Image (cartoon, rainbow, N blue to C red; front, side, top):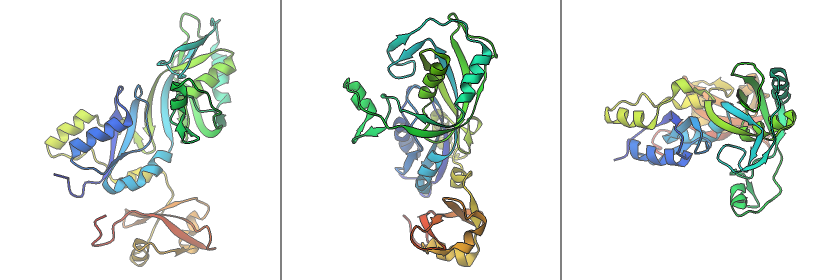
Length: 312
């Protein structure tokens, strides 16, 4: 039987060996509900924070996906692989001479800010209607689109010491925007240092509002459901915690529920934003954005709160 009215966001700790879709499939069975969606894939080998949207929260999945992320990665210098991570076949090697801590610091800080990345061939980016990994598995090559991504900060987490052929790996923490390939970042660090390189380990420690300490594992969620405890389910408002917001009164709330185009003055405090979360009495009502055709107006991108009597 489906759980009536179940909605919110589960900060799931995805364990290695599972795809993001595997997690959704398992949660549909555990929660007895079909309306479950993830917020951007994590590779099967990667562990980390994976917010899962339940019920009405699925309307917010694209916004949760777009929020900033934090990762911890091991970068191994001296070998490059087909997949840019430890799962691939070695395609280039170069003996590592000593690389100083200062050289590493300089290399990683060169990659902060807006940078251009070419997605790995073993990735889900689509070119001409096919995913890049489909080309790669068939031994085909294809021109890949260059993407601009935002790297907010990179810092080294292990001891600030030199690396050598005997110990060619160091650990970094990356705070970044949507669409960043950490595998490719590892390769780029190697290029700056003059060596082939790959990402030898990765975990995601933050996705938007949600951090490691917020997370539950699948086994924990299953046990809590059996105990009729839903504390793993956080309010859907947490999914857009980083989005600019306004609070509206009851009269405006009623009009927004009906998807009305609203005058610009309501959004004066956030007028330079691309989109804004509209709240009433602390609850998320809708996502609005400037109207592309009507001057001095804003339009709904999504109405999140259900109108009375509407169960969809």
